[in-house]
Amino acid sequence: MHGSLQSNAALLGRLKSGVSGLRCEVAVCAPYPYLAQLQAELAGTPILWGAQSLSEHGSGAFTGEVSASMLRDFGCHYVLVGHSERRSLFGESDATVAAKFVAALQAGLVPVLCLGETLAERESGQTMVVVARQLATVVDLAGVGALGAAVVAYEPVWAIGTGVTATPAQAQEVHAAMRALVAEKDVALAAGLQILYGGSVKPQNAAELFAQPDIDGGLIGGAALVADDFLAICQAAS
Image (spheres, rainbow, N blue to C red):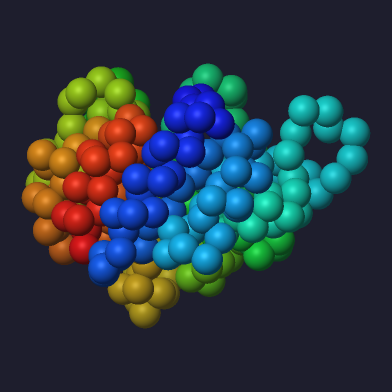
């Protein structure tokens, strides 16, 4: 929950001038009120845009909610689903996240499915139990083939906004395990699945993280609010 019309204009202007020639996909996911601004600023540029959440419902008496079709009206390509803050602060269950994932797909959006464990879960050796459960709930509802139209992001909750980053080896281990889980059902799909790392990615650690064989990009939080930092991370991906 950051931004204003003025600060967004400055950020987007800098990003638009800095992405030319990059060999990677770049997208910005903003709070709902600024989606019209993204559409106006980014249409016709290489930068795609999306939202940070959505309702699992198509329409109806759900005051304050925003549907997938509304996001499509504003040209959204992506939508984050199951971000750790939605799970922890707003009580989104695995089942709710799965329903939102399906709603996004049905509207033609690309869901960015966020999976990850808390510090307590990591310290008790539960990382893959938690991630496998979160992933299985989506696959059980949507089918494994649905992942082919989605992006997955590993978000270790203990490494978000804390300044603590999973080491490249720690992150790679979980990414490889996640890909192996998908491969149990569909080898080809698993090989092509885009798995992003989202846990305090910074210009200083991006290249080493992205060099890991199963890390296909980043889901950037705080560093994306500083144009030059975000562009440096994009450069590392490129």
